[in-house]
Image 1: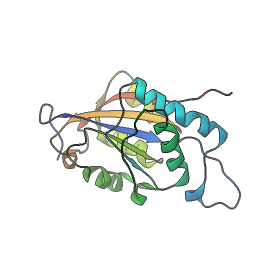
Image 2: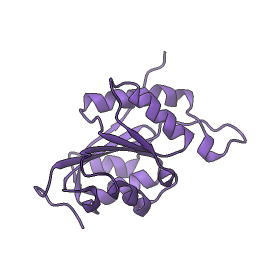
Image 3: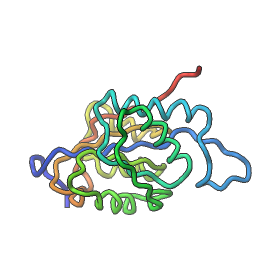
Length: 180
């Protein structure tokens, strides 16, 4: 089932791919930490979300170390961060798994931040976007790099209504910090 314009409040799904991670030898994938660039880019993602007025009511974050660190550094840029849920289903998830997680979000949440991994996040954005402003869809199709942020907007009474083609991709940003 897909949401219809005017069929409920405006909701935004903000999708954030984790910041750049390092590849330490012998460390399992889920335990990989952020690289130096990731530690610069994650706070920049938090600032970009604030500047775009996309601060979430709730964040759902993969349990992987690099996503948790991305969340902590991004949310550290805001006065009062929203609640966060760490959900193991987001790690290495495909579109159906990600949609299952999103559809469980309480109706009172109007802006949701989902922090996870590719290729699942990129595929989710492309699946949900029925259209895009400017060249946003082309940007995501070309590449959804680390620290990329995609904002999907749609009208719906509950998150369970969100489905393929129901949202408009309104913004794509790639947050980059500067070297000290």
